[in-house]
Image 1 (cartoon, rainbow, N blue to C red):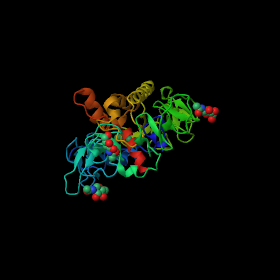
Image 2 (cartoon, rainbow, N blue to C red):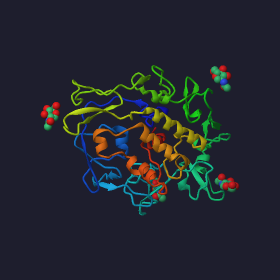
Image 3 (cartoon, helix red, strand yellow):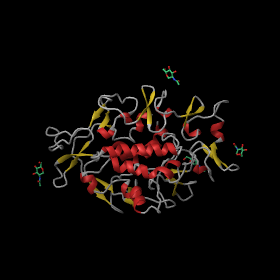
Amino acid sequence: MYKLTSLFLFLLFISCSQQQCTDFSCVTEGMKCTGDFTSLGIIFDNLYTYDNNARYCSSGYYCHRDQQKCIKLGQEGEACYQNYCNGTQPCSPVGNGCLPGLSCYRQSIEAPATCQYLQYLMIGEECSTSLQCAYTLECNQSSGLCEISQKFRDLMPSGVECLAGLHCQGGQYCGNGKCLNAVGVGQNCTDPQECQYGTTCNNQICTVVMSKGEGSSCEDAYDLCDISENFYCNDNTLECTKLSSLVQGDCSDSSIAVCENGQKCLCSSSNRTLGQCESVATSNLGQCKTAFTSFYTCLKDNNSPLLLSGINIIAKDSVGMKNCYQNFCNIYTSCTQYPGSLGMCNNDPILNTICSAVSSSPSNFLPSINLFLFILFIIPFIL
Ligand SMILES: *[C@@H]1O[C@H](CO)[C@@H](O)[C@H](O)[C@H]1NC(C)=O
Ligand SMILES: *[C@@H]1O[C@H](CO)[C@@H](O)[C@H](O)[C@H]1NC(C)=O
Ligand SMILES: *[C@@H]1O[C@H](CO)[C@@H](O)[C@H](O)[C@H]1NC(C)=O
Ligand SMILES: *[C@@H]1O[C@H](CO)[C@@H](O)[C@H](O)[C@H]1NC(C)=O
């Protein structure tokens, strides 16, 4: 499971790039589309490998599955039209026509569906309804706190206090049915979740993330390589490897040029049949490392639940986002860029929705959305 967390750190762990110049056009409200930048399909399969002739909705819009036209993403309380959830199962906070972080809540088939923040409170947090508590928790109406739901408590043998990290306080993990404190640098571990934020389990010792250089094994934890020195985890060798400089030449023809890892072959804006390799990493990756470090420090200081615990951490009022959303947006802007046709289309799913909205008007606090945190949230449920 942990390996997939590297999707969050996709820059730190880069898989091979496609070798065709990819082309697509940007469409906006009401126009016919084939996909968008906020739905899971793109996030998982082809963030950068678009079909040729694809038509993607620009930022702030999604491609309605049935109507195949771009519709504005719903804000909290607005109507939504797909991936309904009533809280009896984990609710996806993406891919439902709402701004990321919101679920499409429909109490029953007859009821109207609206975008709502669901399942974002952890154990012991104050709640008014069970819909707010993370899945497997419920709101105890007499104490007003989220606690393990009766249904799941019934599944727990006596002496067992947790079934998952979600049943423990922030900064803890569930080991053999007991809530245990995550440990710091140099301590023993068998799994990354046992290590505090900012560290990961390497050779059974909690080790500072992004601290290893050329040739170090990153098999256990893909976020070990020092991105500030341009090292990323190569998915073929599973070793820290230096990012290559930009490959020159027409990459739409692989006999002429083949882009290296961390680069994408994008169609040239002046000649759509001509490909050019573009870096998806920013030029100053020292800032990227700093941003990650600050984010982890913030999560740790605020006793945030484990990112992989299954809580909707990208909801506005989750512990992580209440305190650390700015750090979170910083990762996004510090580590990746949208070069060439991507940039021209203005299709950054984050910067043009949440993060930019926040930085330009701090009072208008919107939830911080990050593509990569969606993945963190979703993964525990699909594995
Ligand atoms: C809630 O959703 C589940 C699964 O989609 C469904 O089986 C159940 O009947 C729904 N409950 C209500 C009250 O509609
Ligand atoms: C709910 O909270 C009250 C007050 O803290 C407690 O006495 C009760 O046992 C809790 N209910 C459940 C089902 O745990
Ligand atoms: C850590 O692991 C080493 C080697 O297995 C062992 O000797 C040591 O006692 C462990 N330390 C703790 C605190 O468990
Ligand atoms: C575009 O590039 C291709 C491949 O290099 C070339 O054959 C073609 O003439 C170019 N078209 C234009 C309009 O420059």
